[in-house]
Image 1 (cartoon, rainbow, N blue to C red):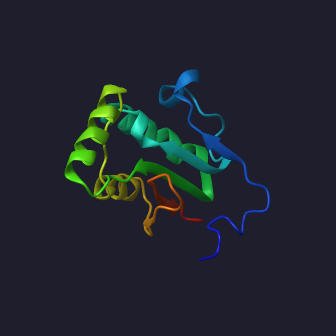
Image 2: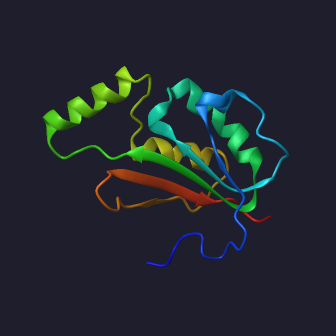
Length: 132
């Protein structure tokens, strides 16, 4: 599979940092970024809901929105332990369908899920903003 961002020559990427105000702060000029990476496993649903309009505004036409989520382990006990760790760390578990719907609500039309790569069970729910 070809790299997702291969057509971007100079990538201006936004990583939402909760340590610096995160989802509740202004993200700069509208359309200023080519990509926004948002690790959803660190936030609650209220924070995700507050962040999405800002992310949609910050990413310009043709830019990428990338929502990261920890894919649950197949073992039910390991899955329960993973959920507990996430919630204990003030985060929330979002399933893939919820994140797809979140992007579609913002106007994304070709949302896709990239499978986990490597040892970290990180899954990416992505879409490219419409160009027009």
